[in-house]
Amino acid sequence: MKKLLVAFVLFVSAHFAEAQTFSIGPKAGLNISNYTGGNIESDALMGYHLGGIVNYGFGNVFSIQPEVLFSTQGAKVQNNGTKSDFKISYVTIPVMLKFKSNGGFYVEFGPQVGFRSSSDIPDQTINNFAKNLDLAAGAGIGYQSPIGLGVGVRYIAGLSKVGDFSGQNIDPDFKNSVIQASLFWAIPLVK
Image (cartoon, rainbow, N blue to C red; front, side):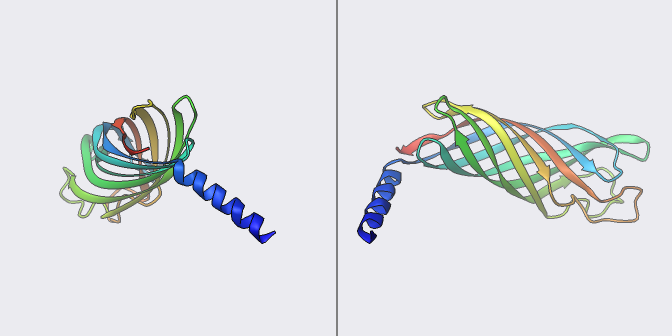
């Protein structure tokens, strides 16, 4: 029985070893971001994301795709009677689990961590509007061609508060909400 189990494990391991793929490439696209929760009055703000992906596939169906993206986010916030663009830039690191069909369509989901790189907040009385760390979860759908060119749409829901400030007429318990539309090219290196 042990020999049969060892033979089965070796067979499955060899099958997965042959079916592994590895690809890297660029990714860029459009962000539509806003804030959700709290009592903040805001409208969507357009931005962009730009960076790279690494995709490690197991067979033809499942892969893990870490990314490093520069992402501009924020919202048009109603503040003191006027609407102002509250822009915050992050370096984000999403790690997506992707499930792909034989036709090239995929679904993905996974966590994302963002590190604030800059902020452009017009009201200077709000100190430290955004925290340095932003935690989120993402889910998306898309299509990837056999040569690695792809298009995708992803929704990123903030899990942590954008900022920790008080003394304003804004409840600080609001989070980032981002829709990303992307073009990418996962260039196969190992197939």
